[in-house]
Length: 312
Image (cartoon, rainbow, N blue to C red; front, side, top):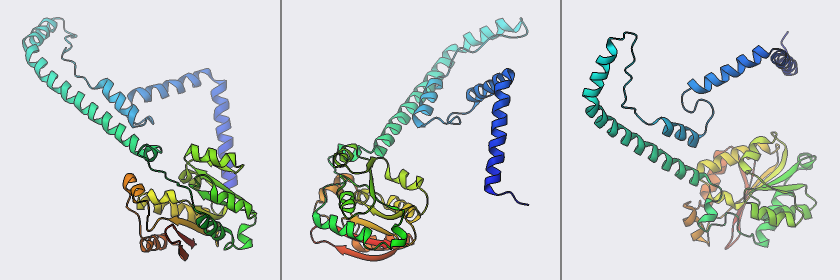
């Protein structure tokens, strides 16, 4: 008879507990385990023990040096003076070659360190603010009303029961506030701590977190609806596709995914500084459909955003 997942989990837990008891009871076992871990850390190639890029480069820098002093020890005493003589005769040549190698290694490590710094600066969530880009600028009352209405009036009661609406990249919490005022159980996530502080002062359930990580971690089908703030506009197309995939997984069948998109940007400098060309309304429709979502409605607000409503 096949074991159920619960049975398998119980067996794994029992074996783990027994192994822990054996380690505690046996000092020798604990020492052996520590020795094995230490030996692996010493002998494993760079990066194999879970270091990040900066740590790997630091380890590379610590060993990126060739030593010209060739060892002269030998099991045969007569060979020692011979080795010393050979080393002395070739020292000038070896020194010249090794100096060139060490210079090359130093330049390589320096270039890798510079590359690592550049990659980290590109990944930094504060990089847009550093160049004057507000990822979530204040929303107009028209957009707030359109987005909040789309998030709850189109949700069947069977879907909303026991589930919450998430506003990802919620900024200062304007849409969360509108949803709560409409008696909707809603919360927000935003990576910008200053925007979250503004929302918290208004008594809203808004958290300073990475929306992508949050969407990936919550159970499938746990949301009744999802509103994606306009910060999504500044992402690459592949990143937007990932957000839509995660949203499709997180929202229950029949729940809406509302997208705020700046399809005809008035503030062109926002996109230029973020080095992200704005997507047209048609590009958004194609992208939404490509992620197995149905475009149920799109409402362009003149001189403002377009509110797309999609559904699984």
